[in-house]
Image 1 (cartoon, rainbow, N blue to C red):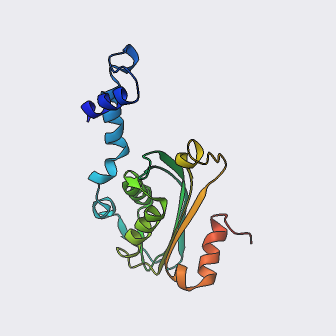
Image 2: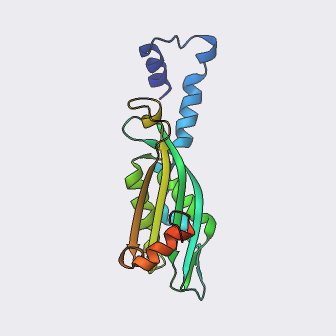
Image 3: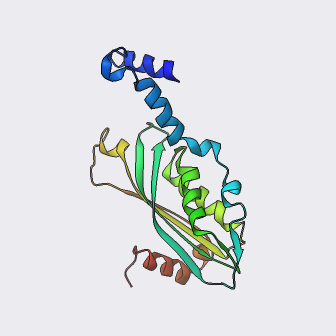
Length: 183
C-alpha cells in the first residue's frame, strides 16, 4: 500500500521525497487500516453474548451515535449521526454493542443507503425484535468539496423493519423520540 501511496503522490505532481511527505505513505497506510477496520470485524462477534434476558417489550432507543465512513464512489468521508430504535421481546442488547455494530459497517467503503440497511438487518434477528428502526443523517464531502459543492446539504436515510415499518404509530413514536417529528 505504501508504494501505491508514493505513486499517487507522484501522479498528483508531488515529490514523495520531500520532508513533509517522506512518512506520508506509512501514515496513510495506518490511517486506512483504522478507517477500514470494519472489513476485519464480524457483526455476530460484536454482538456475541451481549444479549440479556429482561422483561421488556417496549421501544429502546440509542440516538446520536456518531458515524464516520468513506463513500465508495469517491473515497471521500461522510459523517453524521445514527439513531437506532428497537422493540424488544424479553431480550435486549448491551448498549455499547450497538455503537460498535455501527462502526463495524461504517468502517468500510459504503453507501449511506446500504449502511442504514445493514445495521437494521443485523439487529432484528439475534433478539427476534418485534421491530427495528435505523436513521442516519450525514454530510458527504463528495457533495461539499467537489462536484456540486453544496455546503449545507445532508442526506437522511431510514430502514424500518417489522413493526417500525408496519405500524405508523410505532414509526411516528420513534421519529418523535429522536427529534425528527414534532409531537
